[in-house]
Image 1 (cartoon, helix red, strand yellow):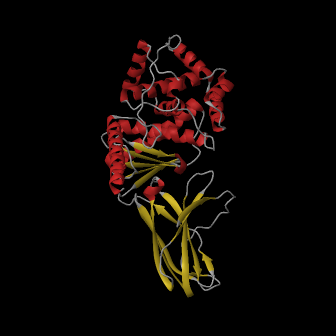
Image 2 (tube, helix red, strand yellow; image 1 turned 90 degrees about the vertical axis):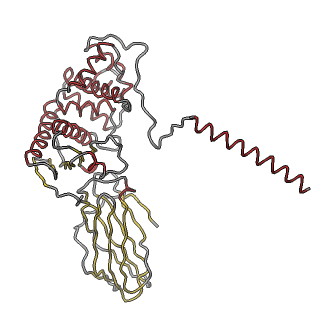
Length: 415
């Protein structure tokens, strides 16, 4: 039986040492303990133990080391035949956990019981969940470490320089700094990256793991310009995640993406052209309409990213970084969009929309305004009654009617 429980009390620090030969007062002895990572699939834990009487129960407790308000430990029964000497193994499918980045540490310990009730709990040990398929090299600058395996040292240096530049821009623009270590894992291309993720979209080029302080990006050596901007963008997301971390740490999409876009630097030509055209046509999405998600359509998404950049820049340029940090702090406390904006700036989301538009030379939002279109998310609550569903329902109704008819016919004949 496998189950998880949350630790709600303060957890005392453990000295993490590998399990070697150890014995409990009741005579239970751990001969050996080991863990082998097979990134990105699983971790296999192995135990060899003996006792003076049959060992009848073995459990394993595991948890990934990450930032969490309520640490979660998973505990599982290990199947084996009772004996005085046992060798067991247990496989943790990391795909079930949604996937974790390389370099993640996993803590584990064994809980053993024999037939007469003696119990032994091993000290916690750790295993690193490293991606050993590649020969990684590393370079560090301040709190940032960049890992890569394809390309020369100049390639890596340019990427970590881009990360350093992003930290400087965050400090200059928003008066925020990187206060926790971050690891970048640079895969050689999007395909190598996607083979390392759980159920990635075909267009996925990078993924951030804020709780782990890690970022995975697929950057080809000849696509360095895109890679430098992506490194800065994802770093912006992680720094914001550190600022608003807490039980209520949610911020609007336009704010999160706006900070990340500003961390990249000036807008690139395609984003700037999209914004300029929308201003010229007075076809901007409203601030409220891009607070939750961005559209699936690529052209609309580009406009939403460009607008987010412009909105955040408007707030910082006109009201300063002190008020901007106060806004982020209110979101950390769980305040709603309208409440947070009103407390800091004196206007709500619609007021922000009006003032931002005015800064672009535009009047009030048109009565008929475009709204981002998005597709239902996998696993969501949306249900669309499409033609295949209608056909299926029709077949079910016909078969049900036929069953009832044949049933009555059979009853009449039987009588």
